[in-house]
Amino acid sequence: YTTLFRSDLLAIDLTARKIAWKKNLVADFGAKPGNWGFATSPVILRDMLLVDAAGSKEAGIVALDKKTGNKLWASPAFGGADTYTTPIVVTIDKVEQLVAWHNGAVAGVSATDGKELWKYDWKTNRPIPNPVYLGNGRFFLTIGYGGGCAMLDVKATDTGYDVKEVFKDKRSGSKASNAIFYKGFIYTNSSDKDEGLQCMDPDGNVKWQSKQKFGLGSMIIADDTIFLMNGSDGTLFSIEASPEAYKELSKAKVLATKDVWAPMALSDGKLLVRDQKTLKCLDVSAK
Image (cartoon, rainbow, N blue to C red):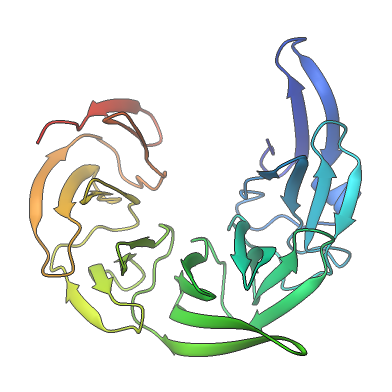
């Protein structure tokens, strides 16, 4: 895990209850913390631990041996610091790659050796939501601070990769919560301008937009149900995940404070929610 601002990356041997190995994102990889420190998550891919080094002039993504911490490869640097997204693993045209969004650029690098395969420059501020992969080379990007959203179409060519914008505009901007692609449609908490929950198709056509606002709350989808937290007051909403219309199923105030921005987690009908003071486990399995 990484510790905020101190930038330590630790591998813990739980059996021996000791540190197995240790790296420092700043000292070892040249990464730079953003205004909120280091908040990206390491990614495990087979025997590799993949670490984001946003802000570094030396590397973009670094692959370590997960057992020893030894560096296996490092991709070229791209974009800048003040980045909070986590790299995702995708396969485009039979090539496994890591896609990461740094401040100012999205790039795909080879999962084999870190070679940069493609890059899309976009002058945005502080990317927090992860890129969402729709399959077949398409990525949906959403960001706050006036950035809006974009759809990329990435295809392999005889000379490399071609990146095209399907659309890019100021709507559907999420400051914190990841968008979700579910059964062919994209759901986004458009919190930047407090426009509510939006549903759109992969071509950017908005199917509906809620009048209800949700602040910077996060969401999760399971069994055709969207669980969406109002980040301003701790009210949890359940909403039908359908492109037909916005249909609210239920709501309940479950947390008492403001700034409820943390991602939720769901397992076996139990939903974990938290604010700055409280962690709760809610049973959401009933109809």
